[in-house]
Figure 1 (cartoon, protein in one colour):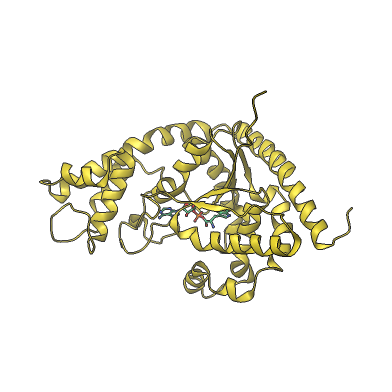
Figure 2 (cartoon, rainbow, N blue to C red):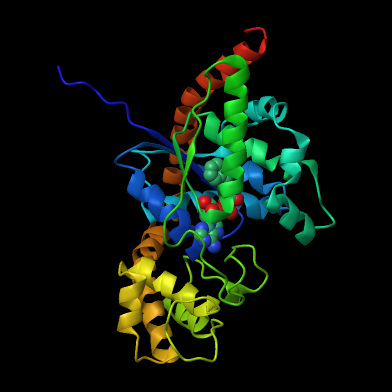
Length: 334
Ligand code: TYM
């Protein structure tokens, strides 16, 4: 009889704090889509994480459903993968509390994202922001995920997740799978178009700094034309050319050619022509996503049904793991 090989598990999440950027798409989402056939994938719109920064309630509600539609438009198939809103699975916050009790204060205070966000929002340095990585660890460990497709910026959080999983296993015996990050070789860190030493972020105050995956083709052209480069007029990937390096990376990932090939292709081109080619490659990648989104966002009944089905499936998996953890630490079964 043929032996059935158990599929490995993938977990990843994205915050519904605005329309996803090209950085989110190239660094994470396109891998989410690719991995669906080979793995058991669980993907979440992590609405609870976004509460660590003050949100407008109406806007957050709208953004959460829009984010779900965007993920579907990118190619997440709700029949193949579990797709849900984080707040619909109580297991995440309950597991986060337990994990919090196994993460040293010092480890949390070393997180660069905590330091960055505290600097950007000095008026609201709250305990949730500090504990953010514990909730993220719970997201991942509640599904015993083997792999976590993310961009480079989440590497440190993944390291903390691995540490707490290993620490817990060391005390109570094998409980959690210790997950590995899955970061693309190229595109793991797409930089801001306005300041290519900073990562592209959907919460940047300057809209010219990022491309949102729903920007019109004309807007994409305009934003890329105004991207910061340098005065050398040479399309080459090397140290000190952050702006050009970023555009070459975007071109390479969007059009599927290597950076070396792209350098050859534009060896005699000026920045103007090069930028137009980059914008075209981006638009070719984003066009089908925009079209599918426009269709899906009209179908609220379908989106609500996706949420419900996703939450049910997420809870079925994560509640088993939560029960196991409660038992291990000595809580009385219900
Ligand atoms: P978030 O919402 O900031 O971003 C979602 C994903 O996009 C990646 N990303 C980028 N990749 C390349 N270049 C960029 N400029 C860029 N900007 C963002 C991020 O690395 C991420 O993979 N903490 C997470 C959400 C989260 C999560 C989780 C992720 C919560 N729980 C569990 C994985 C597993 C975050 O804020 O992602």
